[in-house]
Image 1 (cartoon, rainbow, N blue to C red):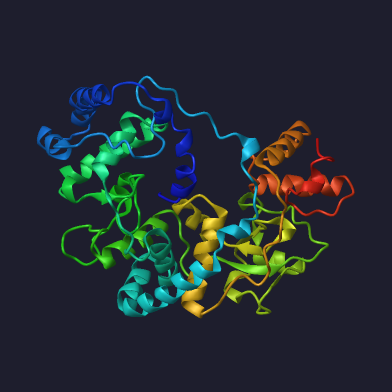
Image 2: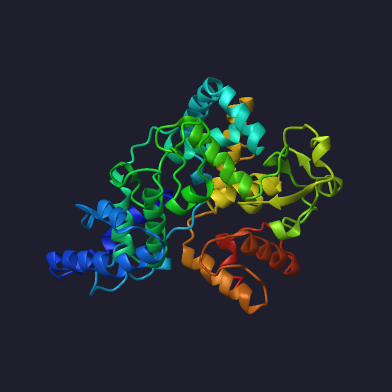
Length: 412
């Protein structure tokens, strides 16, 4: 959580608060009545004591500065106008300056905590560099400020946001943490989205994945580095991390091999990809122990950027944050920490200045022709990319597996 902060912050100007005229004090009164009535009843049903509830909400009021709020009596903001959002190259996600900085600090901390990381890998099967990379990406290795009382954030959003049900569930999970003695409400600090501690877990994830690795009797993801790192590893392990496997490999896909073979549902042994002529771009062979195990093609920018064969562990990283680019960022950062490597070898191409509405129109045209593009949202996920590649091949075009301005007129 917390990774959409900048994107959402940019939408604050469209918030219904701008047009909200109801008396804030009356909404505050409604909030307190909601806590004492509706929420208290649900909390009691879930085993939360009155003592815990009173302690958790003592002095809590609405935080009107949070994004994505929908006060009672106002209308949710309209979905962002697709015609106003620019569709940019995935390469914008990979700030080299940021990656270099995280890698340098990550290498130092991996060395400092090497004994702990070895124990964590032995226990959970997740390499230390992957754990440290997520630690760095999520909270700057625990150095990011967590300025918000989590109960205040979760309660505000459970009472008046566009995702009330989700935040209500997380609020009940936070109350379970307090009830169970994991942490007091006063010490439960988090992000503007309610994500907690150094791993940036939502309360439900804390309850499911947090572990006490330093043996002090508390699962402390705020102050304990061993607990934080082991909790990240436990998360990945429980989501299916395969021990002794890499996350993936940057490759070169020959021109005569279709880029429209992408996706976790089209997995096959890595030896099969190698037989088709796909090679690691580093010039090294695929590890022998990987050859008979499944791999998947990934072309996040189609033929306009780096190409990969990834393992199931790549998709486990996506369980932490459901984004191909996030998982690639973590994989690349982990490789820099472990091996001193640098950017992906292939560059990210310029895909022009299209709008999301352009991509949306392409998706709708493909759907009309019977293609499965996944979610029709103006974003080019793997199903959209491979559908474009298949359409290009069937229409005598060189498959690029990525939307570009030259397709706008042809694909209607």
